[in-house]
Amino acid sequence: KQEVTQIPAALSVPEGENLVLNCSFTDSAIYNLQWFRQDPGKGLTSLLLIQSSQREQTSGRLNASLDKSSGRSTLYIAASQPGDSATYLCAVRISGSARQLTFGSGTQLTVLP
Amino acid sequence: DTGVSQNPRHKITKRGQNVTFRCDPISEHNRLYWYRQTLGQGPEFLTYFQNEAQLEKSRLLSDRFSAERPKGSFSTLEIQRTEQGDSAMYLCASSFGADYGYTFGSGTRLTVV
Image (tube, rainbow over all chains, first blue to last red; front, side, top):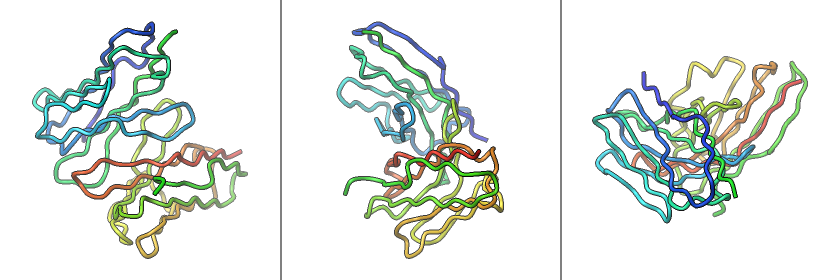
């Protein structure tokens, strides 16, 4: 059974700092991995999707990397802003199943002004 | 298209009552998913539709839960005889295919009192 772990559970940084969020998964046979952002009481907003054949994806100040062999992904946020404060979730789609995503519990990020 | 739409946004119900939630996916997306999220956890998969066919159901989906997607368009999730443990955020997502990421709605927050 695929398990997804995100460390740390919570992170607080001053504005302007670059930061890295970590995601690890137990089964390397994944189809793709997706990072989401969730504001309190809201739904999920997709940030980046990395296919299993890719090593990284970039969007603006965000960069996500994927190392399937080690079962790890990182989300790098450059020059953090208070508006980046949210919970960040990673989710993996297992190969052979085009259906469900398995989520981590998320990292709650607070960027202090 | 404005994305995935879920209604209602909030629902408070008394224990034992039945509730029904609606999800309108992005119109081109043939795949639709329901997830449940409790406080501090990542979303957990409930069920999956491809067009109008319900292809997969999680063990989390007890016999009090039923989901439909008539004509492969909108979907409904009904919970019968609600229990306090059903209190959660119910999220709907849709996708175009396995190579594409999920788009989530804003969710329906259910509180059973």
